Length: 638
Image 1 (cartoon, helix red, strand yellow):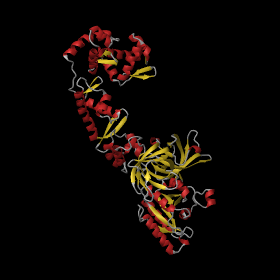
Image 2: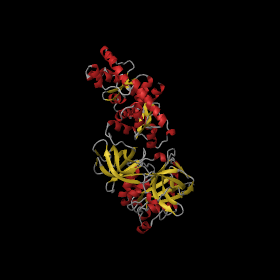
Image 3: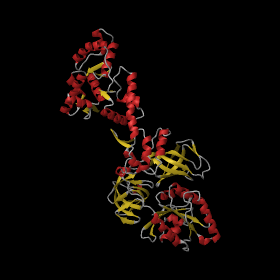
Image 4: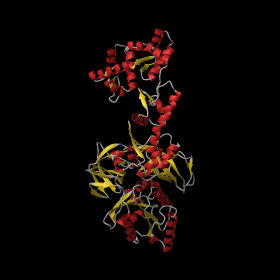
């Protein structure tokens, strides 16, 4: 168990920990000279149950609340300290508010310095404490009157801490390792050492980790867990790690940095949260207010963008997006505390819903529905609510990072389906995916009714026409499924319903019979529309209209405006490109030009057309055949 103190300055937090543990916490020279705690202090003691309890002594002065936050973020248990002579003071209230915002729900209260006052005063302060705790989640917390100087009540408080440690549930270590760094220093003969609280996972000597937000890889040379040398540490422990890395220096590491499993690397500057403004605030908080954001041991500045209105009233709760001035690491469920621009008072806080919030459409109802779905505590709670609102599905790799849950540890709900796209797997609600698939049929039917002379749209046109809200990889996966099932057919690049056909009229068939020999005779250099119109003595528009219709039917390929190649010639040219690559390893425009015996401009036009058809991929001045190209496969078969 890790216990953190909280309370106003000079209420006896440090003296109380010495009485409980028999140890003087880490004290700096300036702290000893001034008689106050400025930064975090640490102590470890066996309170009598055979295990080490870690204590974090936090400063009580209002100027050092940022240091208090750095230590409080990783504690399991709060020891609220209130002096009997002063009673409840401003920092008592602010520290309590911070602890409640951090989601800490286990606590004891130490009513200190009882040796300095009369019993009536002790009872009066006890009533103040009860009134302070009554409105919040820590109402009913036991109060222990103590004197650190005379040892009064110390044994009862120690036993209560032992009882609490026995009841505490161990933090889950099933996720990837993450540790919030609160100290970094150099040890002679060892090198760089960092300390902090392990939020999740396990770490062993020899593991490779990532320093965030730097993204630098480091190796664990040695470690201490709960102030004891160990080979392994896990979530919930105070950990010190001796790190090794290329040109690694202690000056490169700051309080607030994270030590992570490489799978979690990925800092963010935009976080969606569920935000609560403290009821004690005197006025409403405006949209786009500048704030200090505390998460883990990190303190960054930024602005809060309210997603549901321009103001949030004291005590109100709202979805909000934090836009940060520096990168920050977070996962779903992390607690954040917000303080005002001057860092003089705590405004409120909340829970991280999406650590990689989208920059656009954040006010849309669909996005707000996703955030409401993300309000659940666990991935298993969230998924059934999240999938129906995910228009383009959810990436499992994103969920792994967002929830710190390796894929092998979670089970999909029965309502989910995994869809493979060209950019990775997406998760969809099964009913929604089936609805998307069925929506292609009426969309194509409408297109055929509106454009009876066209065989059908190409892929991108159908996406814009039928399902413009879908990202292209998702739409292509949907279309490929429909093609495999036979509900949609493809004729060349054109998509249509199985029963749909575009047929030439008798007049068009007659004109085709006159044009076709000219196209075939032209070979690699077919005549232009104007040349065929002149030779046959008809209008250019009449020729152009028929050739475009034949292209939509898949009988011709339009390379540029008014220049058409037959499908047979197109396959011959494709075969020539495949042959050139086999011989030379790559396709160069000059080689292709020499083979077809045409000029440079026409060669480039044809090569660019094959790029568009997906046969070739360009790399500078060279091209390669795409191994997955449908045209390449068809050409090889021929």
